[in-house]
Image (cartoon, rainbow, N blue to C red):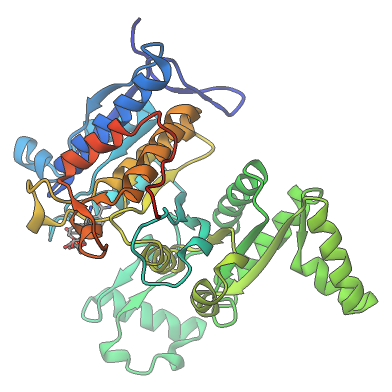
Length: 432
Ligand code: NAD
């Protein structure tokens, strides 16, 4: 059968053929090692689950050092066109070019495809070494806004005449007196919009409803940045009530009931809502949230937050469940369907071509991709086999160094071990 493109249906759902064409970027540094391991596992799972009735045809897109060496461009136009045309793609880590016109290849991809959600599921796999006492309590899905905030790149260095111009403008509109050292101040601008915030929070609430998650937490710093971060929170509550009123119960509703009928009545109303399966929409200030993920991670499920907060929170949570070697990610536009699944770690150039690094981050991003395509059998097959492999302590160097009595495997051997464990269900070793 002929391979076909994935398309976006008029009903807003992806149309995934049985033989889809999926572009990949293998990535720089350790990229080729972790990509070839991940690809082998993804292909094996699809073959195991669908026996030839489904198969992915991979096509390569050039980006990063490989692209630069071949074409003189870090991110060829053709790559952006291919990612746009084929809707769903996957990538390994890319070197961030130093100097030159492109700030970051990842950011360029996200902006071109308007991938407004950075999706990071964080949960612990039994046996993975972790620095916290109860990593099993961490089971969160982070929706990080991907297109706005201080990351928009509107920044002026102190010696740039534009910074002086901006300062002069502040004198006109107010705020200049708050700049402590005008001569040596650089400036960054933080755009946060209602549309940008609401499309992200909408995606988070929809996800919580579809995956039967108990809560959505809006994480913000609105106590200090009232209009940007505070706006995010207010627009979030507004949207939750207006668009999902029947499916959610918000802390704002709780506050209102408390004011009108007292705290006991408010608590009872919230309990009732929870028991009837409603999703609790709440908010937490970002610094407190970073405490809470260590103190009470069980209280949080789906998290929606702005770009910079999301950056910090994703890494802190990834560390709690075993580090960046195993944390997957995706950048998604739920409206157009465009999605780029990616390893969350960098290129670790010192370890390039050593066949030693952990491919789990990219592999689990591939699992997210299979789920996004609706190929859940293959996704679950990989998850079970990965769990078995880790529980048997047959792991790559990062986990090996932190485990007792483990067997050290190369990247490629780890992939073969996962393939070998497919279809056996999750197996616990004696005494585990
Ligand atoms: P890095 O993630 O590449 O490496 C930091 C350390 O983390 C490594 O030395 C290694 O000890 C460990 N590590 C990373 N990946 C691992 C894996 N799969 N298994 C086991 N251990 C792993 O971060 P860096 O050194 O700050 O960045 C190197 C380059 O990667 C830079 O050019 C940076 O811009 C780029 N980068 C790219 C992405 C991306 O493409 N998404 C993300 C982060 C950094």
